[in-house]
Length: 114
Length: 113
Image (tube, rainbow over all chains, first blue to last red; front, side, top):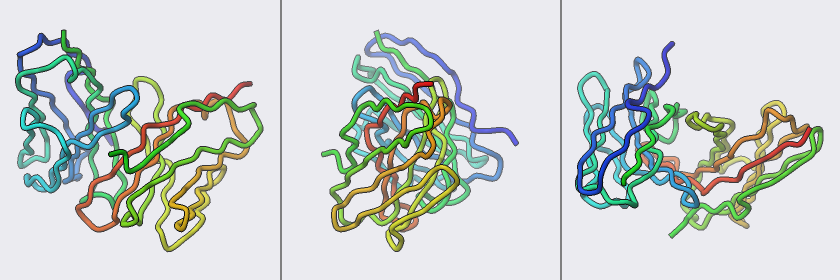
């Protein structure tokens, strides 16, 4: 059974640009959530999608957005990149809505903003 | 506002001894708690969870203890093995469907051979 796949694994962008990250959940999983991991801040929740609907949103500016497609694949977009957006972005999928089902994480996308 | 806190950024333990990782939370509405383990270059993997109706949950070498009155949980690993060296995150939620997971900042465990 394939795990959660995140692409790309590494990305370098310039301040002011925008970026789109992709997450393919485990087959049959309908929930996808996104997290930002930075040193000293742990995993900060960005948003969760379930059946193409955003169910929850963290405390991030509107520059961070996402969507989920009918096949449960999800994309996250960050516009007008800032240096502070440099982080590891993790996607997790689960069968049902969090938190009552186990979340399986991908390896993450390491975004560096220069 | 960090609602889930792991005040020890790192912990070093001798192989075979007990590792105790601590986690405190401030939101009294949290009633479901989880521990995740993360190796470098990998995503976190689920380790063990506990509901607030329990005060202990055990799975092999891993035991999670919950002290609701103190808003404190701990993960015990006995005996510790070098392969346990990783970053451990605790997470909490209100348990109701649709609530997000709130993670702590993580504790890096190093198990010395």
